[in-house]
Image 1: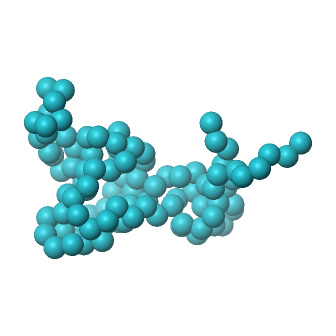
Image 2: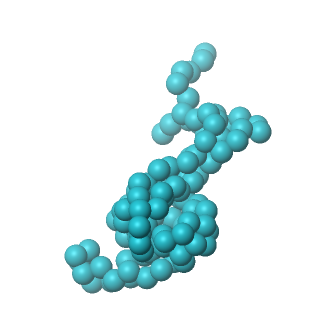
Length: 107
């Protein structure tokens, strides 16, 4: 278990901020496990695999965050993806990181 330090008033992506930016790239990609926000992004949907057969190769994707809208979602690292509808948009997610990792301990 790692400890975190939260800094009051820290802006997004600053050391000690609760929210950290996570660059996912510009192509359809599986979202790593974690809690995320996405700001409205043109040509990108967040999708959930709704196939309950247990076989990921038979994925059936359903939109949970629509194109050019924002929202909050949780990924298990396998069954959530950011799907690029056209072009090569920059996919930036904002992860609930809960601050910066503690590098030292003090007695």
